[in-house]
Image (cartoon, rainbow, N blue to C red; front, side, top):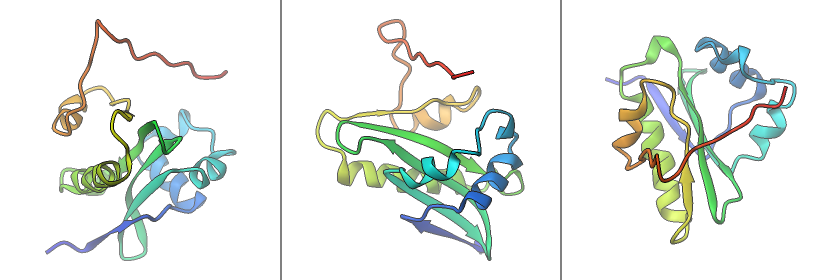
Length: 138
């Protein structure tokens, strides 16, 4: 019996976000000084809690009209491989289906080794016709 709760349209606090991201080693890549503003500007987000502890989350960022990006899909290591990531993605994709108009661009960056997980949601690598590019500010 599952003991956790999926919470649609719920954004973690800054403290919860920092704790969850740090649990998977992202603290090295994140600027937590501005994360609260980023969280507040999410188009949509979902959290998963086990009792009072945040154990997973995912969110959609973008302009909410043409561009939607799946971002910060993360599950605490103690809860991975239990289908929680799938529940998070199912909820994010439900939102996309209900709110993104025809021809909207829905994108994401998959961590190495996680491509197959996102392919089940019809995300594809379009290279060599399209190249995903990004830059991280120093």
